[in-house]
Image (tube, rainbow over all chains, first blue to last red; front, side, top):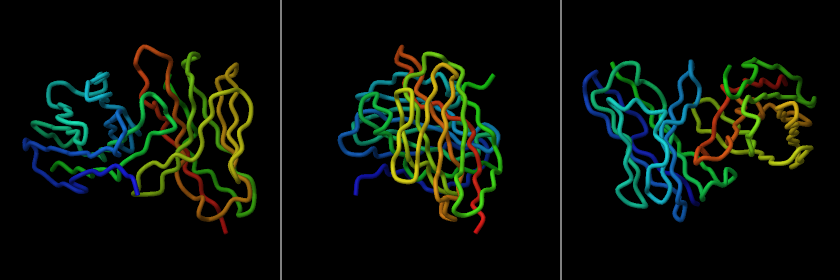
Length: 114
Length: 113
């Protein structure tokens, strides 16, 4: 059963701490997206990669957020330092090329910054 | 103006009736249109996609696209309580490499038994 795997599923951390979220895309998918969901803003695209190269990170606060894809089976999203306003659900999704109908979401990482 | 707009609801529909969900988008060059269903506490799940003007049917679901009016809709026939969820409309904007999904905030649908 092919699926996108995200860790951790839940994280509570103190303000100022570093948070790293990890994503394993579906095997064979070459496009990886990071989304953030809040009640106020809905689902926002933070960054995405194709063939491990970053294509767009304009939705990501550059001063504290960074996204990388060290290999084809791992994408990471790091927040340093974390702030309470970063509390949200972070979803990773993967797909094939630019075909929107192949995009599948992971179960999300629920982050609370206190 | 938000790029993708949806009525947040809640939209309440009796069981067995047709639920009609609507979405408008601002980028006239948008090429691909998607409907996702999201249950509370879960991740979005793709249920329909449409690329051309007109209707596309899949089981109880029909997606409708009108590019001239920049309007996408989702019809759910014979609504079931299990259809109660938030429905997210998403578009892929025109080229230039910006081909991530842009989402509306979703419509909360409640099917009343």
